[in-house]
Length: 529
Ligand code: NAD
Ligand code: MLT
Image 1: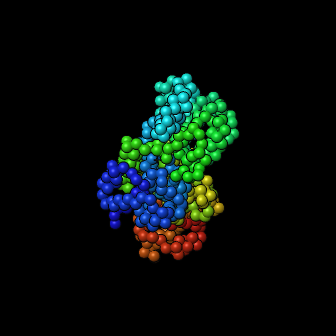
Image 2: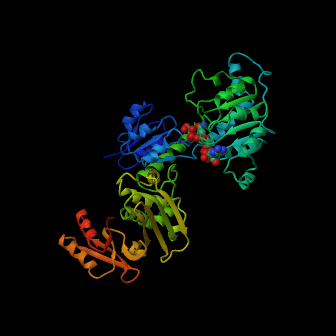
Image 3: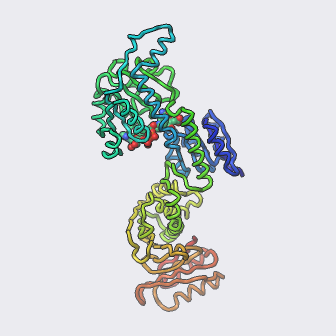
């Protein structure tokens, strides 16, 4: 069956060509869909590509039966229900830097238009007037510009403002003093930026923290005659408070590209305000930017669908090819250990500690732990758990997950150990990757063992006395279950011993129950990997 890539907003042809180049792909472009049409179209899609117009709601995501990836040709992903996508294990990727320059240049165009009344003077002239006195503006040189959000676009705006002779204040929790100095920007807190600026421009994402970051209270703290610019996201500035301040003359002007509701309602108060420059979300609308983002997102979609390395995942840490190669052997071990631990632990798990040691302990953005959880929850939810939603499964199960990293392994050069606490007690399994021998279990509930972590296994804990192993062997023989390998371990003679048998076929539950009934057997588990 063809891989269906559904494109529901206009993207540049260069992007569509890349998508069509994927072997076996069928690219379906359907724009301006109603929510119901979108739900029907997405039902059999493997990938969805959108810009900012398509609302990818929970309802839409729940209508998708085999969707692997949603690609956003642009930066902001606020039109996509990330939480719903993550829960369903659907990867969300964006094209974060293809439109940075377009957005920074638009911000500057808006700021200058505002300072020099260009749109109003133009309109006035078209109406037959020649009002040179009416449209006297202000210069940027010597003014203070506050940039709220010093990410990609904020930084480009700051650089351009410096060239115009402005003093630039930068507010961003992630802006370091060193970076600010290298850009010639004064790092400050939000209150200082708000109080001291002649121009304020916002370049943050829209989040709970940034929603109405500029409201009536903040506007009241600003200099009389301040000018505001928003080319980031509608809702960062409270539009009603802004409209009132513009009408009152407290704010001398505002240049706005993005709105809380788009398209901007016909009766919106901003449409009637003096000294506003309004554009219909044009920040990224250049030929170059649209081509950049379309190419970037299309290439990423193709990589995801081909199972190659991708860079710009929004709901998953990205791995470089080098990191992926380095982690590859540990990914296999981590997943098998997770699956092993799920069958070993039984009972409701309340906490899990994953210890990484030696070569396995390099920081990886939580990738190995995602893999452990993928293995762990796959036992119960086969086929539903993946890297994207593995932590969600843990959260939903109330499983507290902790990572411990040690620079040296206790015995091996690399070790991954999972301890799971359940209402039935705590179990622990440790594994290592042993060169060409691959992933192996090397410790089980504190007992040394050495066996490949694969196939069908029977694990017992029993009294260390003669005849125990023989009896289990006979029972399996009677049921035609061939033993392919055996590992035993104990700490002292006559205490408790463990045994890990590898067998050639699945062990029915009644055989496990029968082993469990033998006097001296303390625990028995069948484990399939
Ligand atoms: P970015 O992620 O590079 O930068 C955002 C910055 O905001 C980061 O440095 C972050 O630390 C900072 N930030 C987050 N929360 C903050 C807070 N509470 N206070 C201060 N700073 C905070 O993103 P970007 O590519 O620069 O894009 C910025 C915004 O512009 C986004 O909202 C994006 O959607 C929007 N955008 C709009 C257009 C358009 O067409 N108008 C085009 C491109 C991007
Ligand atoms: C973005 O976040 O990239 C912009 O809003 C641009 C867009 O979607 O057109």
